[in-house]
Image (cartoon, rainbow, N blue to C red; front, side):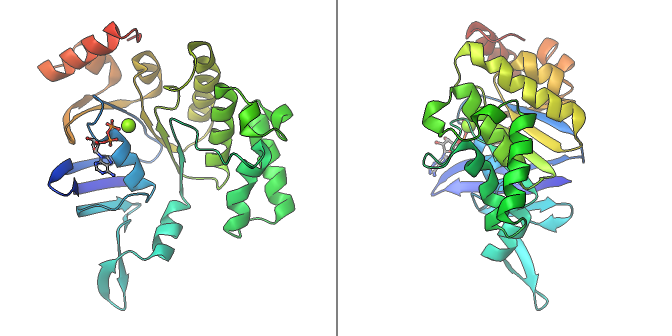
Length: 257
Ligand code: ADP
Ligand code: MG
């Protein structure tokens, strides 16, 4: 479903992703872990077409994200191509990134209307259903400033689902929340995991959650995969010294493994 092939991302001379290759199967739930700066957000932002790659190729269902063929010639992807590819993918950010001057309902209904997928009325109806699904329909007409962090993040999840994506990207979605609000957001993710066939990529420091969520964990350092495996093995008997020391630090910071 997703394939990174020798992907490089550089800013000037600074290399963020270093010939990175990995693939994700349809319906797989993957956890991406690793120290700050190891490239996890960059991977998700590339998939969301918010960042370009310096070299290499990213394929979604066999179609290149960053290149397209026009009149038989392979060229850099156009904005129209990126938009088509992006329509299959939803992303939830650490800091919610809701539109502050739109209500919860308007935040969720916007993309289906802008992309011409749904009429205003249908988009509104779907937005209400999604807000209900994340348990927050009673806040439909509130602006983000009047919502708690957990409520904002649930609106952001509903918004990410509005175009019915096949791939859902979750970037440290509970890191900015007060501890007592983490669970309400993770419960929504657990339901989505169990009730849909979306392919899901989760960047997290919540190792306890990653263990229940993911079939496979990738541990990154400096834009490379150091180690990967099923969560039980990765968290309890990691092979690499770097993985061990990272997990020790995460536990010391108060996260459950
Ligand atoms: P992570 O999510 O694992 O913490 P990121 O993908 O956010 O890591 O960042 C990886 C590295 O890329 C970091 O060192 C970061 O400073 C750098 N980086 C990210 N975006 C930019 C940018 N726009 N310009 C320069 N460096 C960047
Ligand atoms: Mg990050």
